[in-house]
Length: 83
Image 1 (tube, rainbow, N blue to C red):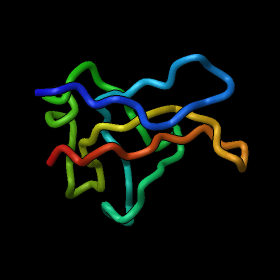
Image 2 (image 1 turned 90 degrees about the horizontal axis):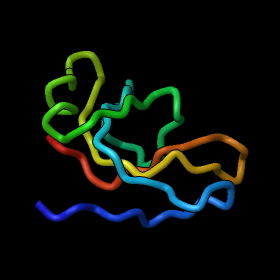
Image 3 (image 1 turned 60 degrees about the horizontal axis):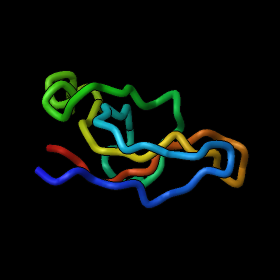
């Protein structure tokens, strides 16, 4: 599978990476950006999928970040959902 590339930049760092993650999102898959505290990073897409639990609002995804937002928060930006 081709590797996703980051579309976002962060003036505080040279590189903002794209990672397999599980996002806790009580409102479901409506949003495109998520606070750092709602995101758990995993080593692979397979591992993220194994830790996802939609019944508990935990969704596997590829996300770019963390990146500092204009509001001063560290955010992850959705690249794509894995499930």
